[in-house]
Image (cartoon, rainbow, N blue to C red):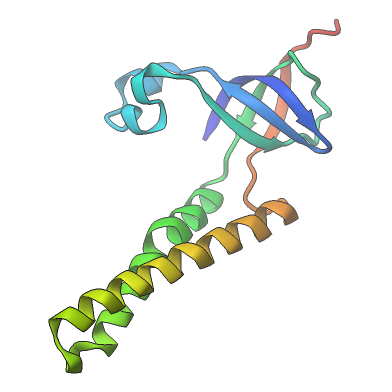
Length: 137
C-alpha cells in the first residue's frame, strides 16, 4: 500500500511522516479506525532515501508487514487467552475466565515486546520509497 505524506521529524534513519488522506480513504468503511474524527495520522518509516523535514514523500507498506503486525496485535493475544481457557476447563467457569484474562494479558505483553524488538531491527517499518517535492530545492 502506498500513501503520500510530509516528513515532520527525523530521528536517525527513522522519519515521522504526517499522512495525507487519499481518495481511497474517503470511501473506505474503516476510515474511522485509521483516522478518527478526520485527524491526520503520523507514522514512522525507514528513511533510506534520506528525505528531510518538509519533504513530500511516498511511503510504502508491504502486505507481509501488515499481516505480521495484525497477527501479533490481534491473533496472538486471543490465541493465548483461548489456550489458557482450554487448559482451565477442568476447574470451572470462574477459573476459565481468570485464565483467559491472564492469557490475553500475557499475549498483549509479549506482542508489545516483540513489536519493540522488530521496530528496533527495522523489520516492520514502512519505507519511504520516493521524495516527490523537496523543501530544499
